[in-house]
Length: 388
Image (cartoon, rainbow, N blue to C red; front, side):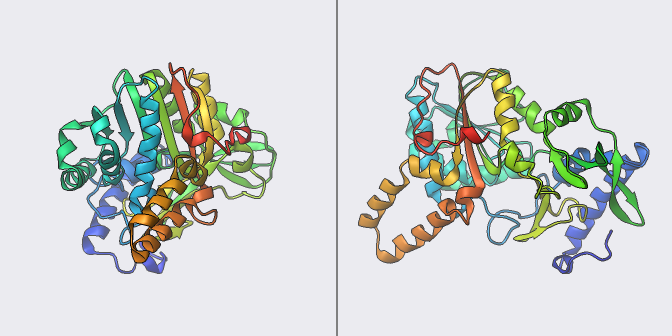
């Protein structure tokens, strides 16, 4: 596995190599125990979440310009400020003033929301599985909003019931997915094996849940490889059961099902990130690269609706931020800041809303349960639920 890898891995530290080697041995052992192949979703789960070694569980630096990827909250605090405006509007509908954020990364989004609206938030829950990320989030919040630290509560598991607003930024794309290929009129599972010192793709059996999702897809393409998001489906069903009175907002990159499974996307959307570079191969150096796939928002919507959540809206990130008052905020900042300061913020905002940046690639979808109002500012114009 260490041979014939891209040049970007030439400068790995001995600690990085050792960490990945330990995780490789764990994955190889599981492959051996399962007759030479495991599902891709299991490989992805181990590579990303294995305790202390997985990508999101280890203590290697991964966020920001010097890490592997940049998220919207790291680009500009305006993202968090405008999301907070939407949350405050939902609170005005009589929803309990609590927030539950899934996978809070380095804590920047939580801090920005608390900076903007902390006095109107009773509790800010963070569901985080990684001990290292919990510590990082704690330090970020202590540094940026120490006055609200007592409002922040870390959770290891989802509560049985929740009243308030759930948010998840770039969480769905990081949940393990299954791989399938369609050839000669058959759907075949694609798993992971190990041979000649490399992890390799091998055919495997599909779970019942994945098979059921495959039956809902309408394609008949030869030599077609793609992802099936059965864990996303289960996650949305769990969310729906947990919310008693409140809402949920998900921000991620993806598309509706018709676009997602377009015949021109014959290789799917699975990819890796390492030090700001996109990688087609995700079977190298587990624990060191982020593995991700775009989100099928039709599956997200249908799973939630079937579990009795109300779909409020679906739009692009750019439209959502503009609907939440971005234009008005920028006008205000223009009158308050120097030209140099304003230009810097304008460049940041452009990355969030431009169609050739995050603005069109990223989508926002909102759900509610037990709320009388379905008119949210974030979906006031350019709602795209017809694409789901």
